[in-house]
Amino acid sequence: MKRLEGKTAVITGGSDGIGFTIASTFAENGASLILVARNQEKLFHAKQILQRKGVSVETISADLNNLASIPHLTATLLERTNGQIHVLVNNVGVAYFKPLPDLSVSLLDEMVNLNIKVPFLLIQHLLPALRATRGNILNISTYWSQKMIAGRPSSAYSMTRGAINTLTKALANELGEFHIRVNAIAPGSVDTSTFRKWLDTMNQEQLLEYQNYVQSAYPLGHIGSEEDVAHAAVYLASDEAKWVTGTILNIDGGLTVR
Image 1 (tube, rainbow, N blue to C red):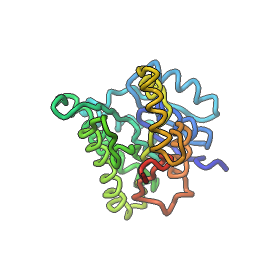
Image 2: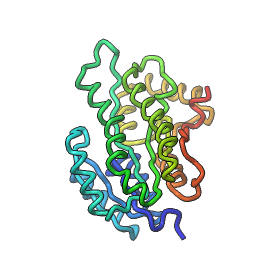
Image 3: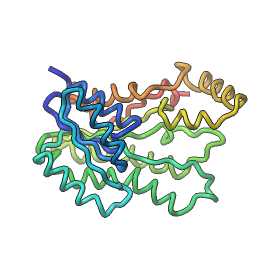
Image 4: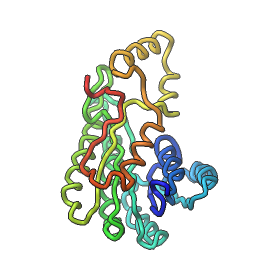
């Protein structure tokens, strides 16, 4: 039996990047999927690929930054799943690295909305379904909640990711009586399309400097892959982790131990 067979997983930001790779790895392990993202074209493409793995895949296009859309979204999710949601992956998020004096209220609000309020509200609205299945919640965080990097101002972003880590632990405590597990993954730098676009902005000298930084900052000497995060997500979502809750799992090549 596959590790997630018989489970339905809702994944926000599931149409590309880490979210899509989590969805793909979940599908390989037998999970039915509902992907929530803003871009309809990306959702359509993701659905075509994932259906080839022989699982049910549904998509919902929603602008999660519009908090007023959450009640309608969650009602749709409950309707499509008949209230049977086993795994909620809160993957959607946004990061702006602006110096404190330059950080606008609109950028702050966007990070607070997507990185804190959206996961909180989704969990709140989907709680009856998660209670019914004794399901579990997986929040995707980041190393920026624990480690700062010289030259990259991250006050607001780090604040929001610290908040999701604290929420993870608090909800593990609060929801344990309902047999709902709540965990988080905090990746280090991961080789995504967004990351590669950032590398493409560097000249040769900057690129060499970054490569040297990776060698010195990461005990394992390299950044991670989307699959590294996805395999950890499968474990935490599966029954193999039935006694794991309140954990912030660092998938970071040792970055946060230095």
